[in-house]
Amino acid sequence: MATTIDEPDKLEVFAMAIAQLPLETLHNERARIENSIDHLQRSNREIEQYIAETEDDKEKNEMHGVIIENEDVIVGQKLRIELIKSEITRRSR
Image (cartoon, rainbow, N blue to C red; front, side):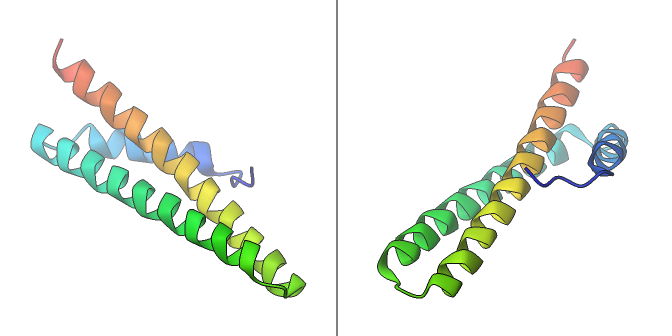
């Protein structure tokens, strides 16, 4: 995975930011991120199909790179969803 060195810092900032948001906004943000993940996963499936059908090795390599980037984004988004879930749980105690 090619996450950046400052990813933990970004997640810490995200966690502090969501602590200030209304509960309804947290639920909306979670749904937005889940939708984004769905789109990225669908995109990856379509790219994989394209890779299987193309004979251009350079294009295949570039598309593999796009899939890897999408997977990295998905990992970050899943971490954000977990932070949102934790914040919602914290508030319901």
